[in-house]
Length: 282
Ligand SMILES: Nc1ncnc2c1ncn2[C@@H]1O[C@H](COP(=O)(O)OP(=O)(O)OP(=O)(O)O)[C@@H](O)[C@H]1O
Ligand SMILES: CC(C)(CO)[C@@H](O)C(=O)[O-]
Ligand code: BAL
Image (cartoon, rainbow, N blue to C red; front, top):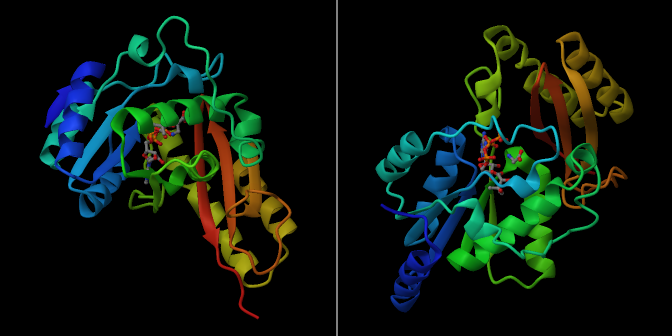
């Protein structure tokens, strides 16, 4: 695996892959890698001759008072995991290479970015869309893989790629979970043992509500019960919402795929999760 921090060196490698006609897959990350990230890498290897992973804790997607400074950084352990998994290239750009003096462009996706995490974290998805657009251009990837755990992010990136005619295939990978159901996340590292135990209420409450709705129960009541279950487990709830799985609009029409999403805080740690809600036939 080649570890690259310099744009000229990156361009040279990508040029050589393109000249050889290799299909390139990109897995963008912020590091502190776990089995969720590795599922994206496995899927990338299945689909392309060359796999590039980026690790960049992107300042532009963190709001004031968020965890940019304490976000876990584990470069050496990450590099070892990726090399063992057969990744060809690790792109570790310094902040100055991504945002040099004079940088003045923002990619802003309206609609899908507006509610949910976009409302709870103003400016967050502008930062995500901008850095992901840059990474797509830098790596000239044919395909990029993202986790369904960050469901709204996936929808924002799909919208951006379609709207800007980006010649890249966007692939979503199902959420990888611990044995007790908690979605793997780098931010789980922040949880104290008692918080980690309480955190299982998040996937549990979402699973219960999805079942209730799938069996014809009242969605409004199911969402309210989810909020109550999370509060009872010690969470401060940012949102629980049943949305259209593509537009993320809360006006759900019958017959369209639905998703139930939640974001909630345990102490200083903010967790997100979501589950599919199967549309009833007929
Ligand atoms: N449990 C998971 N299953 C599948 N994909 C995941 C999982 N966790 C993260 N990913 C995906 O990995 C990519 C990089 O995410 P990131 O580096 O932010 O990790 P993270 O664990 O989501 O971190 P954070 O705790 O900051 O949200 C994203 O596409 C994200 O959706
Ligand atoms: C896609 C991403 C790498 C952009 O910084 C980030 O938002 C993440 O890790 O999900
Ligand atoms: N996992 C999405 C990146 C973020 O929370 O900033």
